[in-house]
Length: 76
Image (cartoon, rainbow, N blue to C red; front, side):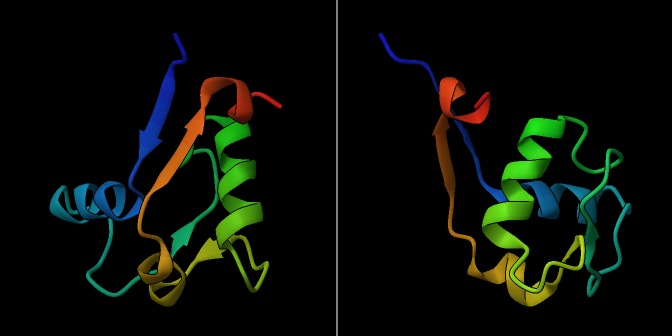
C-alpha cells in the first residue's frame, strides 16, 4: 500500500491567516518558521517560488491548487 502525503498550500496559508500569523495580503517566507520540514520547504521553493526570492507571493500562492506527493518522493 502506498502512503500519500497531500497538502493544500492555500489551506495552510488560510490557517495562518485565521490564526493571525499573516496579514490578509502578505507573502509567506520560505523559512523554518512556516515550513519546518527542510525537505518539504525545498520542494515548495523549487516548484512554487517562481521568482526565486525565498517567499511565496499572493500570486504564487493563488496558482497552487493542491500538492500531492508520496512520502518517498518528498524524501528524495
